Image (cartoon, rainbow, N blue to C red; front, side, top):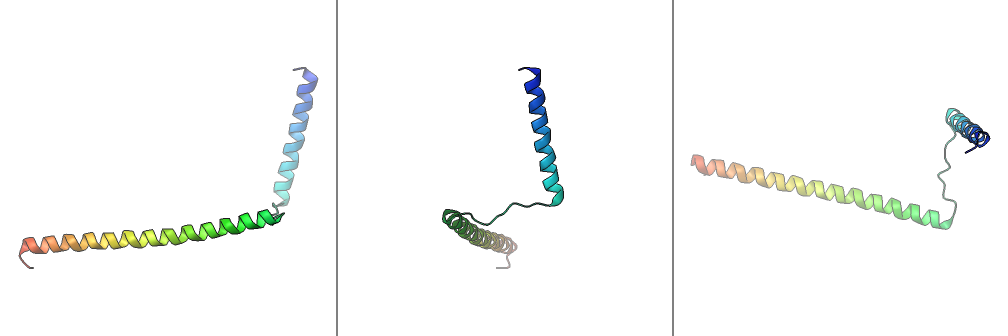
Length: 86
C-alpha cells in the first residue's frame, strides 16, 4: 500500500472519529421511530413478544415458589413424623 493511500485512509478515519465524537458530545440520538409499515409491524411484534416473555417469567416464578413450599412442607412433615408428633 503506497504511503499516500495510507495517509488518506488515516485522514478519513480521523475525520469520521471527529464527527462521531462531535455527535456524542452534542447528545445527538438515534431516531427510533419506524420508517415504514414493516418496521411498525416488527416493533409491535417485538413488544408483544417481550410482554409474553414477562408473563412466562412470572408464571415460572410462581411455579418455583409452589415447588419450594411443597418441599418445605414435605420436610416439615418428615421431621414431625420422626419426632412422633404426627
